[in-house]
Length: 124
Image (cartoon, rainbow, N blue to C red):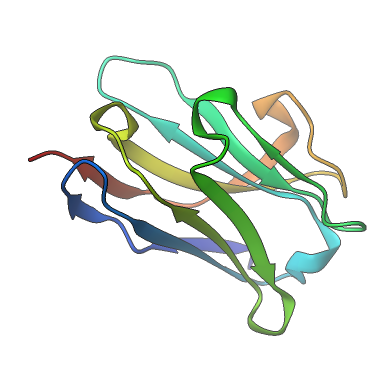
């Protein structure tokens, strides 16, 4: 059974850091691209970052470039999202998802399994 479980969310002040984890089970995560997405209240879900499988290529939305870093530990079947210099506009529920492919597709429809999400709140 394929499962993705996010953890590591919480409440942090502006400028703070959090490291999110996405633990995969039921499949070998290094054979698939894994993406991080977020959804703020009243807004559409958006892609944040993605890491491909074969070459470990990484992608970021412009608003998080230089602040967020995606990585994977294949031995632990886990993908991480290190988030630094957090801003109030980063507040959202963060989800990880498995791509149908080894690369990072642009369409969210190409991600077939999703986790339940973890809340990130950036506030003083």
